[in-house]
Length: 169
Image (cartoon, rainbow, N blue to C red; front, side, top):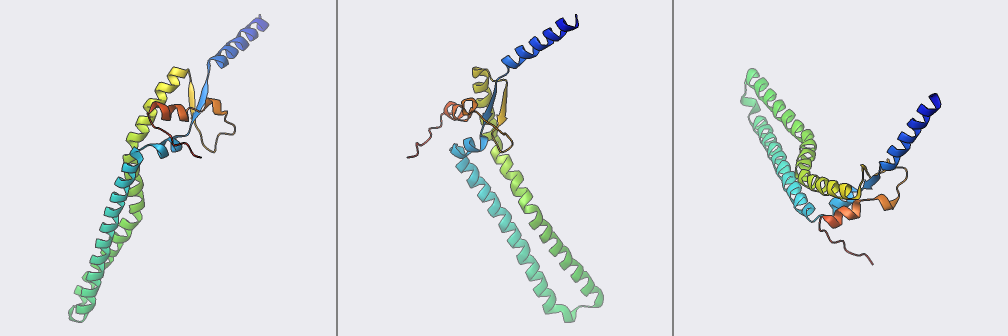
């Protein structure tokens, strides 16, 4: 009885293994050939320019406030000096905080602009994977030890998206 159970389990695992089909996809490559990527890059550049412009304004305001303070320092009372110095420190802290957050804001905005591209790739990948009977698709990156290119869906997805690849000589 025990041998029969073991035999049935082995057959079940074998049948399950035969029904699984695993493929890979290189999303970074697909993104690099998508014409929509140019527009995303323009949007990111414009957003980065806006962040840089805002940072420059904050720096300019701080410099003007410091110059005004130095120019009028002799006319301030001790309490006024303390208040003005605290105000300058607050402006400087705000500017440094904005500068530190700038990269994070840019990364978040870039991800927001890229989301429609990822969604488009995901939709097409799902159609290709279903049509070819894939049960799993892995990202083709440095964590995969071995990849048989016959199971790479990258070019199929690009073709399904209607993107023409330029043949390199």
